Amino acid sequence: MSGLDTRTRPAGPTRPFEWALATAGVGALLAAVAAAPQDARAAAAQDWPPFVLVAGLLLVGLVADEDGLFAAGGRALARLSHNGAVLYAGTVVLVVSVTTLLNLDTSVTFLTPVLVYAARSRGEGEAPLIYACLLLSNAGSLLLPGSNLTNLIVLGHLHLSGGAFFAHMAPAALTAAAVTALVVAAAHHRDLRATIAPSGDGHERPVLGVGLVAVVAVTVLVVALRSPAIPVLVVGVTAVSLRSLRRETTTSAGSAVRILGVPVLAGLFGLAVALGTLGRAWSGPATLLAHLDAWGTAFVAAVTSVLVNNLPAASLLAARQPPHPFELLVGLNVGPNMFVTGSLAWVLWLRSARAAGGRPDVKRACLLGLASAPLAIAAAVGVLVLGGAH
Image 1 (spheres, rainbow, N blue to C red):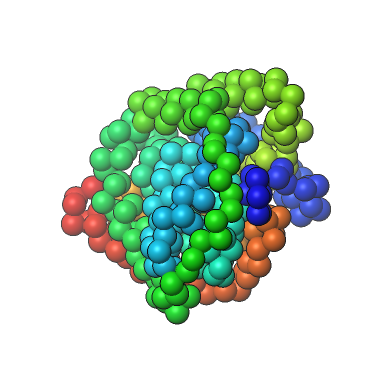
Image 2 (tube, one colour; image 1 turned 90 degrees about the horizontal axis):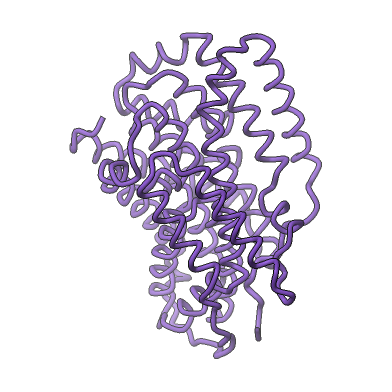
């Protein structure tokens, strides 16, 4: 491929903080099992399907990236966009679509390099595109259960299919994404005014094969099944196995393990089970949520996600059935935009942006998140309250 190769390289060596997170998570898990084994088993039963699902989606994303599907999206954006505003609008649609179908972690991992390429091929800075990728991946993860692990943790009490969840959440989810996109656009309006010309490079076509079939398959499974975790993982493993049989491919067991970020997933799973155990053994979180209205529920969820990460926060706050589950999800999904501790997506975004030669600024991203998240949460909760979805 001429120009910048947008196909994501597997992440580099695991950093010390990732091993520290894994150690802390495993330690917390063992402590929970020792202190309250029955509650720990219940928490683990609630938490393992989301982590299995995201593993399958990341594997499908790896194969789709190897087939050039994401790169093709970036080239199409660059080719069809007459100015910065059109390029940004296309980015919003692309990020929300990939987040919805293949999970927000897949979105930030594979789309961030694509957007760096799309911006540079048009001769403009990548800042509005890569910040939109991060913030919209979080804010846009409310449309399907598999879009965010928190959805599946909370859905354990609701027993909704993907279609039913979409019907409940679509208006609020699209509202949160729209508000977030508008705030980022307003902050970078000068960059988006430019009329830009394509560089004309990068005409390699994507491979319409295993990756595309896997994307379609997992989309159907997530929408149709109440418990799609195992089937999606099977699709992901099968897709990686089939791609690895091709000699020219870069897909391998090693690259799959690195894309999964096993130490981080293990650490977050341990913390989620530990806090889920705490939420079952201690009535404090459930009592607090029982006394809060929809707005208060979303606020507490947002703050808790920043304090302990949204996956452990979901396990803690949804250990018992919450009275306002949809508003809880708004806080858990959009709230992480306020600070880097909020979600796993931040870590994956930073890693992918730097690997692609981008210049992500954590302080700038946090400022944009602090400006957009409260507005997006308020707008989404308002839509839910007006619609009577509780």
